[in-house]
Length: 249
Image 1 (cartoon, rainbow, N blue to C red):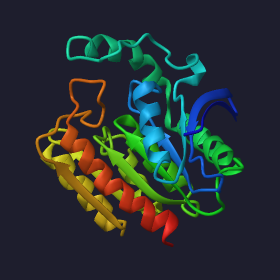
Image 2: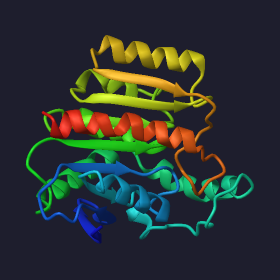
Image 3: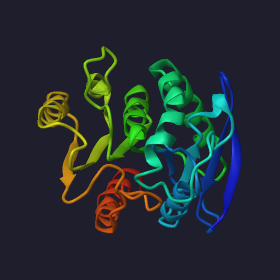
């Protein structure tokens, strides 16, 4: 499986990124993958490789590139319950600095770079996000409705907030098909209901479900939250979504 470490030109510098793509030599659909809070690391690189094996060019940018190359803080090989709070605390300033304005500027750069790669086929792309990356995937798709045909978010956070720029407020701009895979406890019942209402009112073609028996972060095998059946359900939902929006069409 070919892989590359790349640098993406942005308005604020250069974002380091990881890319994986098939070795068959043919152009393939592009997928922009937004990481969870812990950022680019072997776990996400392996995720990109596995997805590339299904026929996609997968680009994984370092969301915190303004603060240094990935990883921007030292990460344990396994992020257990005891280590997690301290790691998140060190990353929190970078998360807070990643404003909606920065997200959208970066999204423009990431999509421009992705679609310019010689291995990427012309046509629509998909955005995928884990944890906080789910909101970034949604914002990217809403800002580029003619380009992003599919969005998937897994164990998302902060999709529905009181903020004037809450991600759910951009749902009317979405034209992509959407799947959201929530862990039990990711959202309050009230927020889950508001999320469903917002998607329905916007006419978004979507599926949204709570994956039974999971906790936040269930797709990540380098954390204590990992749930193998939850990860498999994630693949069972993600791969058909990508096929029908990026290949079958």
